[in-house]
Image (cartoon, rainbow over all chains, first blue to last red; front, side, top):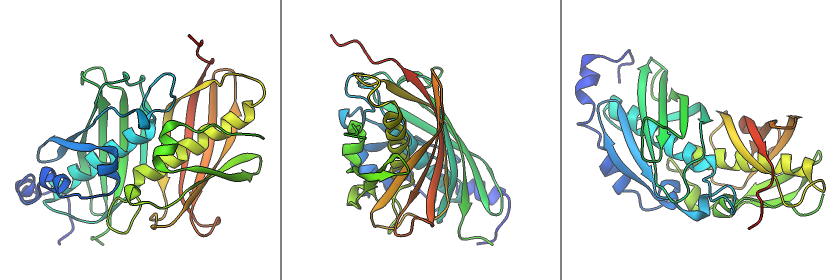
Length: 154
Length: 136
């Protein structure tokens, strides 16, 4: 594939050649399935997934607050799917880094939604960001920023 | 150091305490199908989860004996750098408490697999320390 900045051609591919819903539905095992992460919605360069509340994922049995690890997994998958949606298909990449700011504890019992977008893509790197919320996107529980190394470009 | 209490999320990932390394709990996460991301690779989120648990265990160990019940550690920021792909084998992690104050702890934590000198991921975490919850 010709490497380069996002072009109108790439734009057209977004959401057509690659379907995050189908991709997630086809998973038979693995970490996403173990966590119970499922598809919510996507667009040309964004993806929204959700994680049902599960007491096995809490950081403290007394408080019932989710650990940050499952939220990192949720955001990492949503950002990955946002990149693939943008690039129009499955292209291997590796997470270079991911930072999660935990803005407030998730409300025990509530599902968590992760919405991520790919806001910049260069020849070798995709830049992503996202939020996680438990009902109100205007009152997020976490903010994330990360980068991916694209492995199929030079 | 006696018993280290891990989080429920640690049980979910299958993490156990393997021993002690430089005074901090050494954690091991055996391979299981539920940790797989891309084919043939561990999911980055599972590695991040192991790093988080190792970081909290490291702080817990420094406070041990001083408090009962345990304090609660709430991650404020976590930054994970992934250096090498996680292969489908056991993964280890151990944290180093860089600074612990009254309210905030800063921890550096590394994860590796076969070779401790070949780190697959590293994280820095800032955590808020809250007093133990009152038992009802």
